[in-house]
Amino acid sequence: MQVKAIGIDCSTRITADLAKRFKANGVAFIGRYVTPNSWKSISKAEANNIISAGLEILSVFERTADRTKGGAANGAADGKAAYSHVKSIGQPEGTAIYFAVDYDAPASQHNNIEAYLKAAAKEIPGYKIGVYGSFSVIEEMAKRKAADFYWQTLAWSRGLLSSKANVYQKQIDVPANGIGVDWNDLYSDAGLWGAPKLPVKEEIKVERDINKVSAWAADAWKEVTDNGYFDGSRPGAQITREEAGVVFNRMRKNFLLLIQGISSDVSDIEKRLVEIEKGDK
Image (cartoon, rainbow, N blue to C red):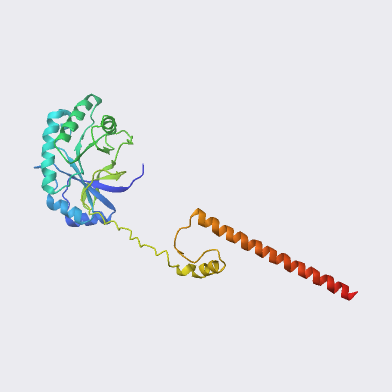
């Protein structure tokens, strides 16, 4: 899959200086926690630091590594908590909140994880739901349509990469700019938020005056009108099939006249040559 951008996720709060340094490193987004009352969660001020540096944010919720195996009850509670926190930091609707399956979840717990995600989704109206987990979790939750976005970790993935992954956590706990981070590849839209989008420049269309000839075509236009191919009107208009037929017919007639003129000239030359030849005799 083609990498569209690279990013990090971390537990450390991002200062304005750190955000600028990661931006200079080519980072496009930063993954941060949106779990209320946690030392590692993002605040509104921190979100502003990241956004001001021109970076996007990936929001992830995690209370404990294996909380998703608690099923729908845990999902509903966590969805409500996540919703409250993202609203407090100004995360816009339409973006994603990822819920972490941060352990080697066996297939026997996939039903519980699905129930957790679907219950959480009901508690975050206006937001998309994402899931973080191993290859098997991503593959199975995608098959069950339990989320909108998928963030795969290399942990417990046994060297496999899901084609369903929007984001891939390719390196874990690597030092960068004085803190520990995980490095991620972004493959497609992942519900990120924050960085101001550049305004799209609207194409300005200038209406063409069809009655005025363009400067670059002025000499040629004069020549074809002088030769009678066009009548000199509407030089900037599109030509119709019937108009093209008239022009071709005029050209045909001019060619015929030209050929006739050449034939007459040849005949005169032949007669003169004959006269010259007789005179010599």
